[in-house]
Structures are given as structure tokens and as C-alpha cells.
Image 1 (tube, rainbow, N blue to C red):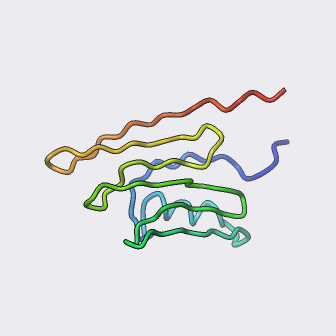
Image 2: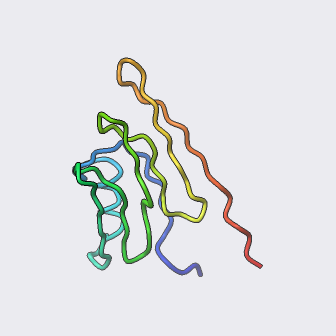
Amino acid sequence: MPSGPPVVLSIAGFDPSSGAGVTADIKTLAAPNGESKVQYDYSLRGLLRSVSSSYGTLISSMTYNVDGTPKVVTYGDKAKTTVQFAYDDHDVVNYKVSRTPPPLSG
């Protein structure tokens, strides 16, 4: 039987207030029965930088464009999943997801 929390894929937008989107999903998934502790780290501008929990790092880093829109989100998984955001003239977001395969354990 696998140990640790279940693996969940959340496809969500981003809301830096944690009221919706991926940060709200993290709050819900990390503490479904109130047993996990989630810690958020914010920049001086009030932008989310990282999220950790009693299970480990959930978001290891976030960078933003000058206007506060997300630029790069790096998750705390073994594959170091990274999402890069790009915006057009009409603020339509395009994104690219990349992952590095985790090392094989012997």
C-alpha cells in the first residue's frame, strides 16, 4: 500500500487571495479532515511565493509579471512540475507545463 497522501490533479485558475483557483484547492486537499497544517509565504507585494504543508512542499516557488499576473509556478513534486504563463494583448492566458522525470529508485 502506498504511504503518504493521495495524489490529486487539480486543473484550476489562479486567485492570489486563495478564495478560488489552485490555492483554494490546496487548502481543501491538504486538510480534508483538518489534520494538515498549510503555510503560505507571501512577498512584500502580497503575492503568493510558496505553499508548504505537513505533507511537504506543495508550491516551491512563484514568480510574477510586473502587473501581478503569474509568470511561473513551480510545484513541490518530485517531477518539479513547472507551469509558465504567457498573456496576449487581450489578457488571454497561454501556458506551458513541463516536468522532469524523478530519478528511479533502486
